[in-house]
Every structure is written in structure tokens, then in C-alpha cells.
Length: 408
Ligand SMILES: Cc1cc2nc3c(=O)[nH]c(=O)nc-3n(C[C@H](O)[C@H](O)[C@H](O)COP(=O)(O)OP(=O)(O)OC[C@H]3O[C@@H](n4cnc5c(N)ncnc54)[C@H](O)[C@@H]3O)c2cc1C
Image 1 (tube, protein in one colour):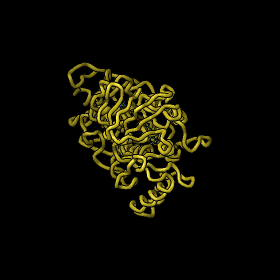
Image 2 (cartoon, protein in one colour; image 1 turned 180 degrees about the vertical axis):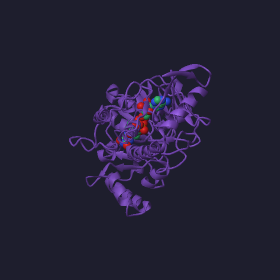
Image 3 (cartoon, protein in one colour; image 1 turned 180 degrees about the horizontal axis):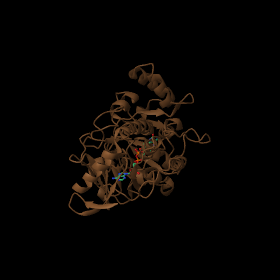
Image 4 (cartoon, helix red, strand yellow; image 1 turned 90 degrees about the horizontal axis):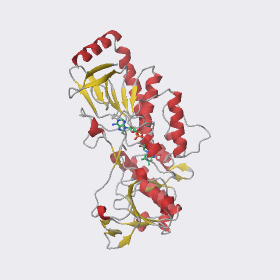
């Protein structure tokens, strides 16, 4: 390790990375690491927290299970254990990821929050700064996830509310809300599942369904709805698949609009492919909505000191507010050379080509296709970097390293 000058002219410890720099030790970062190891390539993973898969370990609720069957969620080269159920629990998924990390001997550098990363055109290297180090490599893999930061909306009057207001990323269980009336803002998978969890703890959730959303049964005839749709897509156009799925969903769940959950005009699979918006997979929420245990409200007009006023003129008192308002990428906050990214921190190029950017930049896990997209990206990144690795002559590699260090 040597000292070198940072961008601001300060002295920092400089680490020449023999192989790619991966930012983020979630499932995506781990998957790329395993794929690089598979090709015998070295790498460094930088993780801002002190553990792998911090999202799953620290920012998910206790009752969470994988939404899709396990074979759609496995990372490259290692299936889930046979004894795991079809939909592994959060803790089972975390234990799978720990086994994955030890199987491929993945040891991230923890507490390394990447502050900036830029491509140095003169030297043709990526320069990645954390608090205390500067890492340098020809390759940078962005694996910080689509869910890096919670989205906190500004709602009129929210600062006046008397009780706790929390995002689903810090919600653990409904046990704290027994016999309490709770407002859940947002009706995606997290909002719906938190509402169900609140019901199961004898709380009284009111969910705000301002936007349209597709709710589908998690399974149809004992098979995952997602799996059925994927299989049908091999033979039928997406619009027809959507029609079939919606007919079956209506037979099984009824007309969700009758309970205040309106469907978008575009079908669920087409919508997912175009916008990445995931349908809500029903694991009991619809039954609770039908029986009135989860109340659906159209939209919040204003938060008051004791509760909320709604668009339809109703006013209710609440003990707590839970914001199920989603997450966003944090790429714009640290990646300075981001020609390949939108303002929202998502790749400009759509799946399946989103994994490769310019100048040795790669992205993994930004496909809006969950862990299935992660596995697909990771395999391609591993192969692509391995091809380049083979063609790089060790000597010129070392020479350019020396030139770079002198110039920084
Ligand atoms: C409640 C919930 C349930 C979900 N359920 C499913 C499911 O059932 N199936 C599915 O396929 N997907 C699901 N997802 C989607 C989920 O995002 C993926 O499963 C998976 O966690 C994505 O992995 P990732 O590594 O891309 O991102 P993450 O898991 O978010 O990991 C990114 C890592 O990067 C680190 N990081 C971020 N910024 C920096 C920085 N500047 N410097 C260093 N490190 C940084 C973070 O600390 C984190 O460890 C769910 C998401 C949520 C929120």
C-alpha cells in the first residue's frame, strides 16, 4: 500500500486493486465476486456497513419471505439447500448468503463507504474514494442496489403528527402496534405485507392506495404465478399472457377495484417489463381487505396532529404512520462518471444489455428483475472481465500501474 494524492490534493492511502472493484456486498456484489472467482480472477468488494447483505439483515421486517420460489432467487453456482421451503424466510435467505460468501471465500472490506468514483481518462483507470482509502482499478462494478436509500415523501402537515413516523426499512414487526390504528402510506408489496403483519398482531391498518396496482395471487393451481407467466411468455405474446393472468386473478381474488385497489390499464407483466413496477403478490392481504381488517383509503390530503384527512373528506386518528414509499438508487451521490446512468441512478440501457457501461464500468442488480436479474448480470460480467483479463499482458499492466501512481 502506498500513499498518493486524492482529488482534493490530500494524502490518502492508495490501494492498487489487482482485478475489479465491486461497490456493495449485497446479493449482487456477492454474485459478481463468485463469478470472478469462478474464472480465477481477484477483486475487492467495498461495503459501507459492517456486514454482507445489510439490506436483508437490517432493513427488512421479521415476517419477510422471498416473494418468488427459491429457484428464481438463487445466485450463480449454488442452489438453495433442498430442505429450504419453496419460499425461504428472510433468515433462511441470509443464511444462504453467508454460506455463499464462505463457499466462494468472499471477504469484503467493511466500513468502506464509497464517497466518489471517477474514471481518469488520462490513465484509463477508475479511482474510487472511501473515507480513508483511494482504490484504483481498470474495472468498476456498481452493486449498490436499486434499494440503497429509502424514499421519504413530503406530505402536507407530516411534521405536526404526534406519533412515530417510520419507513418500512425500519419496521420490524406489528407487535408494537397491538390494538392501535396505523396509517400505511403506499400499497406496493411492502405496504401490503406490513398491513397484513399489523392485522396479524391485532392492529388496525389503514392503507393508502393512491396509485393503481396489480394484485395477483402468489400461486395459481399450486404453481407460482410468476413461473406460469414466464413459461407462457415463451409461446404467447405478453398482452395475451396478461389477459390470461388477469382472468385467473379475478376468479381467485375477485374484482380488487371494488375494495379500493384499482388496476393499471397496462397488464401486470407488460407493466413490469416496461417500467419495472412489480405486481403485489397476495399472501392473504386481499382476504383481510375483503373482511375489512385492512381498510383501503384513496389518498391522504393532509396529516394532522392526531391523524390524517383523506381525499374523500374522511378524517381519522392514528397512533403511528408507516411509510411504504419505496427506495431509490444512490448512484448519483457517489459515481461522478455516470454517462450510462439516468438522473435516478438507473442504467440508461434497458435489460438485458444494462450490465455493461463504458470504460470498464459494469452494473449488477439494476434490472428491476430482482435476484433473477442479478444472477444474469453477474454471469455476464464475470465472463466479460475474464476475457479482458486474458488479453491483458501482465507487464504492460504493471507498467501502467506505475505510471498512474506517479501521476496521482
Ligand atoms: C422488502 C424487500 C423484499 C424483497 N424481496 C425480494 C424477493 O423476494 N425476490 C427478489 O428477487 N428480490 C427482492 N427484493 C429486491 C432486493 O433488492 C434484492 O433481492 C436484493 O437485495 C438486491 O441485491 P443488491 O445486492 O443488488 O442490492 P442490496 O441488497 O441493496 O445491496 C447493496 C449493498 O451495497 C451497499 N452500498 C450502498 N451504497 C454503498 C456505497 N456508497 N459504498 C459502499 N457500499 C454501498 C449497501 O450497504 C448494500 O449492502 C426485495 C427488496 C426489499 C426491499
